[in-house]
Length: 104
Image 1 (tube, rainbow, N blue to C red):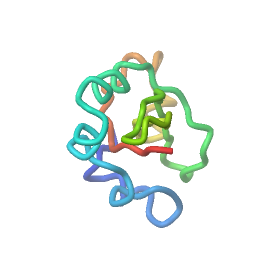
Image 2: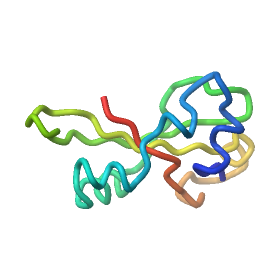
Image 3: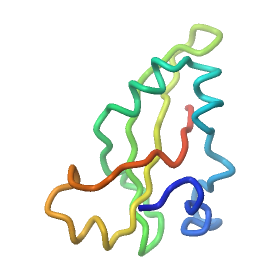
């Protein structure tokens, strides 16, 4: 499993690094714990973004209201070693840990 501690090592300059993702504490402060818990309960799916040959990105997203009452997309990012994904019978059997969050 690739967590927030190891994400930047695997991703390098090719894609979002750990320092570019928001932490859980930051997102809770902006959107509240309810929304953070909710996005973490949504089943993650492949993001269709090419990270590199060894890392697969998964995301789960929800629409939330920002401080201006505008709808924005809150996304939880998960990173897995490709070998873990290829060798499992079901993605549900993998342990999932959110590496960080983004808002668009």
